[in-house]
Length: 204
Image (cartoon, rainbow, N blue to C red):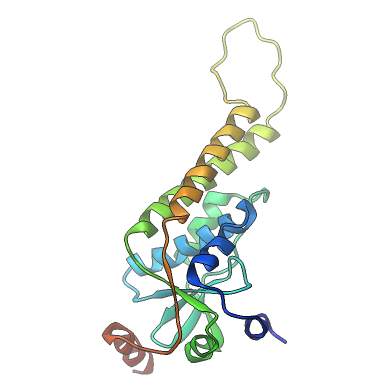
């Protein structure tokens, strides 16, 4: 049984509880924020997209173009030592992947929640990029060799402890911003004019 079908076996969550699911831990919140950032980057680049989250899947957020579901690529965790900024930049610039599930399947289940665009996505993107940069700085500080004794005054370089404090501050700021997001539970399929336009483009 695939993951999307598996979420149908439990009762749907109210949308405010769905947001709590995204914020249950920093390890879930950060990948969710990456997905919001990537989908928002494609939206600001001119693609008409809606953003859908599913009960029971944590940070598994999908983009919707017309009636097609698209995936924003794999997120990375807080403790990953890959370049966080570069990874996020690459995902924002890469095409979204197609998902075989239909929007109608999700909306009929009652387990889908749509993000209401109210301008908070810019702040989520900014805070996510800030946290990604702080994580890169922390990993560099941890891999930096121990200081050798010097007679001259060397430039002050932030310690791993100081970089960790910056990570904590960015994490708290991102959490506060994510708490302002609003999701609405989808109970049926309804396409607006922009959705219909995207369907026409895709079929042309």
